[in-house]
Image 1: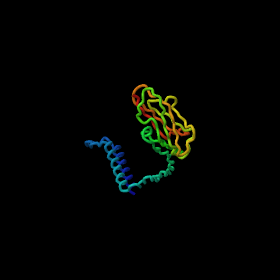
Image 2: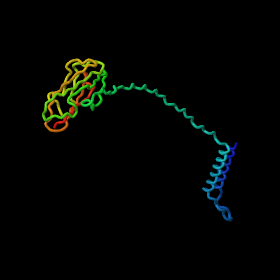
Image 3: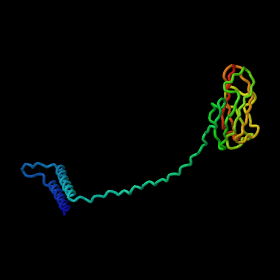
Image 4: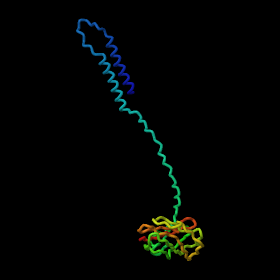
Length: 223
């Protein structure tokens, strides 16, 4: 009903505008009435219609458009942790012992999977033994097999650095099997250097898998 009234008002306004524009222009002797600005009238009529429509819209608000419903967020899949990898194990380094002197200051021996072990029970010359320049001598190292298996003829001692080399060779093999708790003596030929000073040779005892399991040294003084 309200929309009909609004439309009727709009038609009446437009009709008045048309009638006024068609009225005779030459009236007798009376001074012409002030002419209204047709554009202003049209603008005012249009504003009135718009105002009425706006008021009607406020009284009868249109249906509110519902906001779109978003789908529920999908939870990320739970990752199953991978099982922990087994930790690699290593053999602990264990000292096999040793007497004073040539083996007393040696680094700890390296344990092997065969638990090879040794103890230096005797050696010659003693630490710091004084020798003349160029003197020939035999260094001797007596070991006891304190491990859990027999030393075969593939076991040996070998130089491991220092400033004095043996006379003939840097490797001396075990000549015969050495049972557990038995002893064996390595003999190495030496010649003292010709320059005065303190000289040292480092050695290592090695098994048949080329694994070092005992380290020792010899030290002399040349006068």
